[in-house]
Length: 471
Ligand code: SF4
Ligand code: SF4
Image (cartoon, helix red, strand yellow):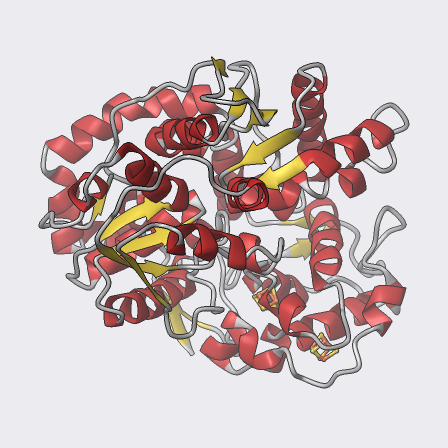
């Protein structure tokens, strides 16, 4: 299979795997040593749960793309076992691990209950500590992790990005594909940047409307806070309308999801401790999240901080309180009046909501509760859109293939609005639809609920605009 990558031109990959590191020489830090050390290796017990039945194969996006055994969940588990048997970490092994999107579709599909999520997270931690990535790959990853988990740094980008988008340069670059020829990574990043909305701030305290049903803390997130402020504002309004007091401390930092999903264990733990500290003293009944990737990591803080005597117990208590916004709203039941919203919606399951958290019914039920709204299902709905945290930056080519496939399936529904619950999915699907010359309005589930509760029409969600639009 011939692929392109990170601005270095076509790459032929016999394994069908690709990534920034696919065609560059990767080297173990301890040549000849067993792949894994004693610090949280993938569990041999969990590896042995796999009975090699192959039921997970059709659910796996990389296996779907390339049909290569070692790019399937079963193949990757086989490689982990090789490592546990004392085989060294080879560049080929790392390529197969790197190519995994971490979408967890295999976890849902596996009839034997194999916890691939735990296995790949442990493996990634080992790779990050024990493998020397090529300089270019390292530099890209360092730049990503020096930017995305820091809302203030993202905020500093808003001005120049707005200028870039308004100058027409952005449309020119996308139309001519010139950036793509220089660097697919840069082209991907440019195309993924959403049209920037007005910065709408969420107050640190939003009182409950009507009879109070509880007090919740709200995660503001990093990309969500700076690039999709309308989603956070809608979340606070909807929760308040449904009787919840909402506390959103401005001092809160990143939840650590990107770091955890990429094997940066120390960094993820540092962010997790910070968030536990922030919300612990607030006396909240729940900590509400509106970004699927963040929510799934926050529900795993108990595991992430299990070895930390000062935080293990506190992390468990925190984890028990984490709820996706659709979970808490569905659990509580509606009290605010829903006004009719005549719009057809294609609902896209974010992998970290559907596969990682098992939250599928709640957003659909909430949307179906809106009079006049028609919900349509997307073909191949379980297949990842290719966003997967930073995957679409590190591995732009397969991410684009998956994005195009998702966009075609979304457009085939003929719906007027695409709804999902993750900022990464919104950016990925929007750029794929635009690349296909299609137009569709995009919104988060809570923005649709917010529009209905406030009695706003579908045009306020971008429906009817001539370009792929955010609210
Ligand atoms: S991970 Fe599960 S579904 Fe996949 S081969 Fe192993 S046992 Fe079968
Ligand atoms: S997490 Fe997704 S990409 Fe990775 S092995 Fe499982 S299904 Fe395949």
